[in-house]
Image 1 (cartoon, helix red, strand yellow):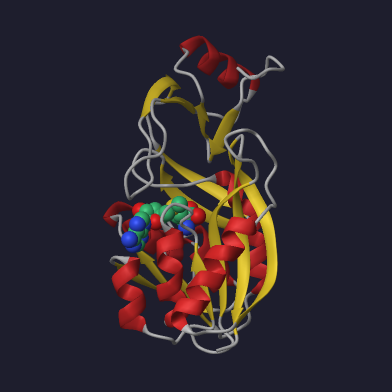
Image 2 (cartoon, protein in one colour):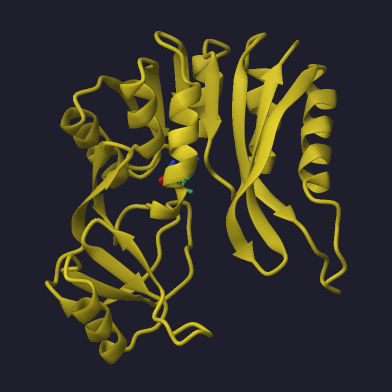
Length: 259
Ligand SMILES: C[S@@+](CC[C@H](N)C(=O)[O-])C[C@H]1O[C@@H](n2cnc3c(N)ncnc32)[C@H](O)[C@@H]1O
């Protein structure tokens, strides 16, 4: 329950995920929201390379598979086995609007395909790379469900970017954890004119709650990567996409490679 006495939850399809493991709260959520069929409670933070979390069934149907609809696209998700955040739908719509017909878009860390599908729907030739075999299986199914073609690659983005080389017009990096280590390799393997959408974390306050210049740490990481790879770039856009902790925000920076 939050400070205003409301029970907060994330809704993915007809599954709600609440912060607590309280059956009473779960029943309350179901009573107030008739479209919710199942409620799980969080048992851990997101962990491991697949960025999934432990959840415990609390109420409704004992089913972790659901169909989530956003921006006119449908996504099959297993909330136990796949990463999915319904809170990023606005960001996915923003990227969908930027995509040009027939451009080559590379979606690394693709999950069940929310970025990949909207880019393909808007006419891009999409290659999507994902390490979690279950998420990749659903990504394939989600491409079919949404009647788009996506080149789905089961593999490690760190290796695949080197194999694919600088062919993409747009590269999406939706992995806030670990994407900082990866940005030099992406910059190195991007052609002139390529736009990189770089999702990462930025500290807006230090441990003593002193305000820091927003995005300063991220800009330094990009500068360092460009210097290392001897590449010039231009920052097209940046924004906060969500909260992470009281001092840290999830952010996106759009980078254009000038070479
Ligand atoms: C933060 S999630 C983003 C998923 C998806 N883009 C979305 O917005 O729902 C990161 C995804 O990257 C995958 N992943 C983690 N490390 C990877 C790697 N080295 N190569 C490819 N995929 C990886 C995880 O399994 C997870 O699905």
